[in-house]
Image (cartoon, rainbow, N blue to C red):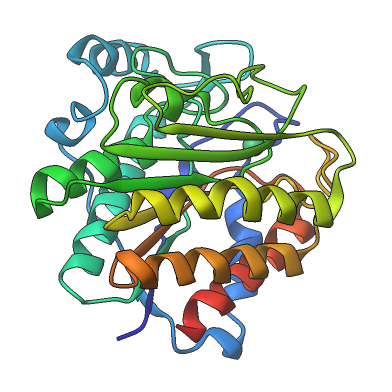
Length: 308
Ligand SMILES: [Zn+2]
């Protein structure tokens, strides 16, 4: 078995306005990095698009209809101040969801030890009925519900180390104790949620970090909040909302991590997955907006996944 990588050229065709940080070059930078022979052993695969039923695992029909109705035939259409659709955005978002659910199927079928999905648009800000923060559908949330529905598992954990709080994932699982949601993020920062006091049905664990926290406080938050919660919950699958915008080079935040921190956090989550989930871990790209910081961070993350 190996680490599987899902990517697809269609993910480059989701277009955003000039100067927008969430741009196709992000995936080009990742692809260049993963072309290195150090990653020759990656099991590279292309996903198929998700059907409506997958979207409806985490969103009502009205949300899917809204996104479909907004999809432009040409040009760019803003859904809010940050979130834009181009003619191929809907197809890219459906393909991103298809990759995430296929990744879940892969780890349960033992086709892969773990999987990294290099897709865009990202997903963790998408709430049940609101596309926001560059996100249309909540890919991580759909993947978790897909695991429960298709593979009969009860407990799924989503760990979100993107520097922004995963408000969408929190919203979807707010009253669903079958999914543990743990998030480290900068606070204050967009979208403004993610206080420690937001605990849902006891299944939401927020670990907000002050600007300029750096490596030590990030790791401390992981060790004192995230890892003990995983140990108590004993998930049967760990999904990572893997944003790399907490890197020190990132222009949108100031947590100032290095790629070694992502290597470390990946290793800790792999240990947790070994303990209760048979090693099953699915990692989904979220943010990360400095091309060099993103590429080096993804390389550290994937290299660690490949070590098994
Ligand atoms: Zn982010």
